[in-house]
Image (cartoon, rainbow, N blue to C red; front, top):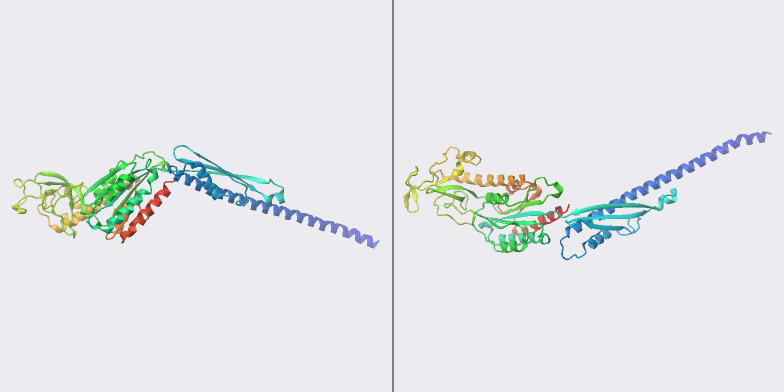
Length: 440
């Protein structure tokens, strides 16, 4: 009887232990199922991420080659790029499918789908054999308007000019396939400024010919070069959404600090739209006024540094001075002296003189011209940037890198090298950047 009593007492304990084992087993299975599901979900996200990258890369490649005459089947090319980046079996998937379309206006769209083979989740949870995963993406080649503004002053003679020619020609050739859509311009400057190619399509051949013909002479009239870059027929972007805007860029190259500016002058009663420049040492104003649209070609205006009212010798209030033919009263009036922004009072050493002062000393006058040449260049660059046009600057040799950085759209847009042999590489770096950002 005692033995029977003991059995009666032990039986519930055994049942309880069995229940514990059963509950624990169920809990383990459930936890393992959740873990398996978590692993599968993580893999699904990884698959979608890889597919998105493959699709974006394919759309990018398609947009980049929209105008490539060597690719006859653009959709097939894009599909091959997508398949190469997302092959069958990647991360446990079956064979993916990619569909390529375009809007006829340069926009490439890629849609992709695949199935994740859910081996682990199916074993523990009896779930679906596969999970469908899809992604899509698009890219469009943006239109560009790019102006090359190149310094061809006398200091560029020899190897620097040859290296500049090679670098700038190769830069233009990077955009050969987009000539029907993009527009380019070419401006060169020394003492004067020349627009060798206006903003237009079909630019590679004419710009290459113009660059091949460049020579080096004269000073450095950066301010007027930038003013003429601003005056180019850029597209009006008012109201255009940011992702649809034409990419507008100035690539500005110089090997020296500004030494000239364009202004209005009067000599012997005649007004001149002309360039005043510093001499080679930068310590005095050059004798002759120079033509603004030719390189180092002068007007018949003697002694630009001989300031005054600019009237004929019979009516001027200035005293006799030494002239080319003995003694005369001929002098040059600088209208900029009374300019509200750049007038003589904007430069301290000139503030004590009158706007039609006769024979201002050479030191203050040269310092004033140096100030004008730099400040006007900075202000013209600021006006360009205010229109949403980016400025890349390339400096060579004796140019002040800080000055060029001020002209640029920021430190990432400013390049400098002491060696002209590196110019081609710098131009290529900028071309690579622009080609990348032109896909959106």
